[in-house]
Image (cartoon, rainbow, N blue to C red; front, side, top):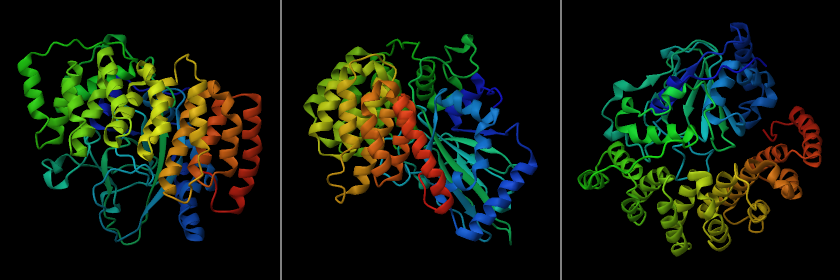
Amino acid sequence: MNSPLLLTDKQVQQFLIDGYLVLRPSSLDDNFHSSIYTEISSIFAREGNPGNNLLPKLPQLQQVFNDPVVHGALISLLGANYTMQPHRHPHLTKPNTRDQQWHKDSYFAYQKPLCHHQLRYVMAMYYPQHTTLEMGPTAIKPQTQYLVKYHAASENNPQNDIRMVCSAGTVVLIHYDIVHKGTANQTAETNRFMFKFQFNRLEEPTKPTWNHDPSNASYDAADAGLLQPIVKHIWNWLLGGINTPSASATDQQASNWETKLHDKDGMVRLNAAYNLALNNQYHILIKQLYHHQAIVRYEAAYALTACRFSKDAIKELQIVLDKEAQNENQALCIAFIFSEMGSVALEAIPMLIHVIKTNQSRLVKLYCCEALGNVQSNEEYDHHSVVQCLIEMVCNRSDEEEDSKDASHVRFTAALSIAKLGSKANEATDAVKNALYFDPNRYVNGNALLALERIGSIEALKIVLDYLKISRWCSKTTTHSLY
């Protein structure tokens, strides 16, 4: 593999603002992309859509993501040790199909009401053929990735929509939560393919992983419009949190922002919430966590992640979580906030473990499991209690028939957090092996395999190699495999 071509500061900033980036692989020619189109057409004709089994059926697709341009962009946005998720999907838009509805993707059909403003997940869309307007290109609404909920009826600027008319081989990286849709294929007989792959971060950022010019470290995101405080916060997070905001807002400014928390425009509300956070007005936002409308609570939770610089805010959130440990609405929001804050919330770990063990809500357990991976991943800490808690969650299949989808979501999130801990989770090897071989959920299997790779001991790697021997055979004999 050639050396990765990292993004520039401007490209990273543009991704944070607009939510997408168009790439052209440098190592692959038109013949390669044409062969992919021919082969996927044949697979669809013989077997139908291969779904998650796409990569075993078409292994040469890995060359797209090994390309220096694509690989370098993913390193830049997700860190050097990012991973490809086990969910992927080839989308076929046949002639004479209609537009999709505008939407944000679910987390492969699992419930996750609070997603991630910070760059933890990125989606890649690869187009093996020249895609014209008539063929139904993907359409994107730039700058919608941070909205909690998109309302089509309130759309003011449809002229800003982007349709991905592109040449064969184009890869478009999008923020996982951007609003998009497939458009109508108006041709008489031309199929349009798009391959969707998902990638996620495994380590908290401690320094820039792109081609960064230190003179741009204090970037103020003045070019981001209403997204300015959001982009400013995420930029600083990606740098490793080197810039500590100064609480310089006047009482009048704070009052104005508090009023705008109730504006009808979601962008205005988020702008106000993040400005309050960056000026350490966390008390106002914590009150919002008790609002009867979920969207208000979630907007406050997103903004409170930007209070990671404030020890007082973190302490107050721990007090609230202790008080509301059995209340799903508040507990899931605060677990999410600590998860996004990362290692600065290290003191919250005992409380998060307590909440996992005592709260019966699957969503609360999910966000607590995620937090244990993110808060711990870069830190030296007495991690035994964390690993034991995650082992318990990975192995918890006792009520599998009751609400099994939510239960499996907790298990594969716990397995992913074990993967984030890497070698520190060596004691989880047996439990993760059991999940790899015996858990009925393919995403649990996939994250268990990743966890063993990241644990990296001789024993763990032997399990990986033995399993891959089996899965290679399975991928040739069935249309259902791990990936």
